[in-house]
Each structure stands twice: as C-alpha cells, then as structure tokens.
Length: 298
Image (cartoon, rainbow, N blue to C red; front, side, top):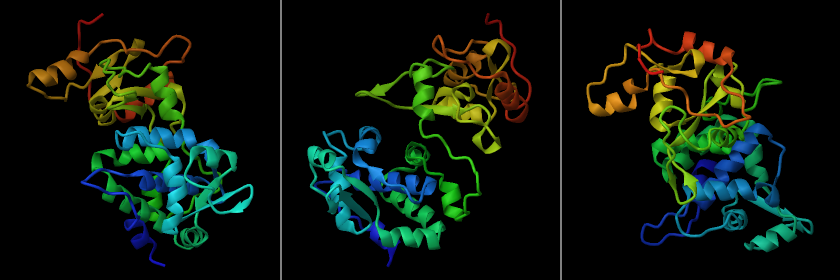
C-alpha cells in the first residue's frame, strides 16, 4: 500500500479555491496521538473539544464541525470508526457520533505499516503539512496535535520511560498570562481565537525543561523568536533583559526590542507561580547572548 500517496490524495470538498482542511487536521491529530500511544483509540466525545479548537484556529471561517472528518475520513481507507454496536460509523451527525459511543483510530493496515517503519509517520505528517498549510504554521500545528516531527522523521523509537510532551501546556500558559505577551502586552485575537501568541519554554524541553507553567511564558511570535535566539532574557526581579549585541536602527526595533530593557514582565495572573528561578538561570546562562543593556526603567 502506498500510504504516502493515499495521504496526499485525501478526498476533500473543493469549490473555487475554498479550503477544507478537516481531514488533514484530523489525520495529523491521530498521528500525534499514535506517536504517544500506538494502541490508543480516539473516542469522539473525548476529542471533540480538541478537534473543534483545531478547526477554529486552522480551518476555514465558515461554521464547521469535527463530526464531518470523523465520519468521512473512513472513505480514504486510512481511518476506521466503530460504535457500541460494532464496526462502522453511525453517520456524520454530532448527535449520532455521541450517542453511538463512536471511537476512531488509524486503519489497521496503516497502524501495522507505522510499526514496521516508524519514519513513515514523519513523512506522512510532512506531506499533510506541506500540502495544506504554510510553513509558518507547521511548528504551531505540530505542538497543537502533540506531534514531535523531528523524532517522527528520524523514525527513532521512543526509549522506555521517555518523556512525552504535555499537549495542555500551551493552553495553561496562555491562560496563566491572560492571553497577552508577557514582554509587550500584545493580545490579538481573530474572532474568538488568539493569534500570534505562543507558549515558550524558558528551559528548553530538549534540555529537561518541564511542561510546567513555571517554565513557560506567553509570548508573541516576534518575542518568542528573540527569546529563543538569546536577544531577550529574564533578569532579577523578573525584569526583561535585552542583549547589548542586538543591533536595530529602525524605530520599530527600538520600540519592540531595545525599549523593553528593564521592564517588568506582564503577569502571570495572581495565584499562578512565576517563572522558577532555576529555569530563569538556565536560560540566562545557556541561551541569553552577551551582557544585558542598562536601562533607567524602574
């Protein structure tokens, strides 16, 4: 079976260039869950909320429902659904899937192929991302569905007891900081979905940084990139550090970067632990570049 060809050829509703990424989003979500638990199943009532959020953030603006891909992806032979009554989907209605106890998972042949050839998972995910979404969204999508793409593409087996990422971290961190960038206060939304805000690890996950709120910051896309590149850091008193090695001559660079030096972080909200000192120190010594700029900000 040519699984890559099958994934590339998912049958989608199409008319006049209108996007319909429902099936690709469900399949990416299923691949992420398979990577974490190859034996797991996705009960519709348990994943409906996750799928709704994916469609709201990465799908079309028109009203839609996760029931549609949950039912129709079966036709592409990469997905199967069963209910309390046995194999087969009860239909594409939300009520039918809920009442029937519908459970979905990757098709048996695909699961077997992924076990034989672990790197296939990464190649399938890459095909879905490249065909349906711009590169600027790939990392965000992988985080949203709990997929570690680099690990998937190498086909490296997960070591016994290996840590799994917590898919809830983004929501927990953004909530803790009330959906605004802790450096600049940006809080943009489109409809009811935040846009341009990300959950940043202070101590990187690859270096034993936990998926805990006290190791996270809500940052806009610009300041997340600058934080990870060592332009920005967090100093004593939870004040912003700006590297002396950063050079920006435009008013935008001054307003969005150098002017931040010495400012206190915005948030987190009362009752939420701020960034732990150990994680802050790790970032300052391992990522932040050079000495911080001096500022008169109090």
